[in-house]
Image (cartoon, rainbow, N blue to C red; front, side, top):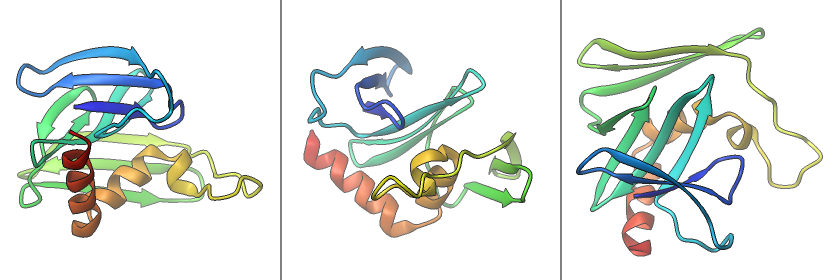
Length: 142
């Protein structure tokens, strides 16, 4: 599974989901087909990508196969800070409180999901259509 960094499109991360091995790479060009995106927060790795018809998440560096019936995310938004949390079978996998970077209103086509990886991840995981599109796009790029 080849993931593109959300805020630096030439930075790639290859994830071998069978062996949970990760390798940093650099894209040859912006047209390099990818299977998802990754971002880092306070040195921890977070990602969402697809391979072989399956969706995978990386939370705090831990690779998990996504199962909508067991893995849930929550995003609490407040004026001072947001809190993203993920649980699986009622066990907390991660809880991150952070100050989001607001999208620039001067950059065309940029919205809050472009600058807030946790918002993007939460929104994709809670929307079956967006999850399906992500899996389908990864399959087409293979």
